[in-house]
Image (cartoon, rainbow, N blue to C red; front, side, top):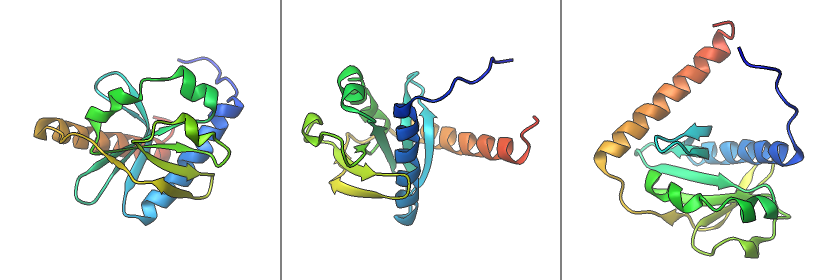
Length: 151
């Protein structure tokens, strides 16, 4: 049994709003997405999206300049996706971000691609299969918990 849930910080709330806007925008573009997606490496993607043709887009959300400065693990995510991007709010200082990755600017209702998505190295077939199965199982488990929260 876990203890009481701590209140979210302003940065956490902003990250949730950005994830919501991204999910809406990506859905209109044909992507299905999951927030807080655990990777086999032990890391967690802020948002992982899957296209109809089986490509994975990993988006790292940055809620503040301090969040970006203190969290430099984003290059580790490149091996877990076909495309990579950052997502930030409109008032984020864009010049802090590296120029190569794609860039979404988002709020709670929508997102706009401001810089093209960065293609990564081709993912091995075994990793793609494992990632696809992880995505499907996580989505199914989350839906089950919504439909039957007492279990």
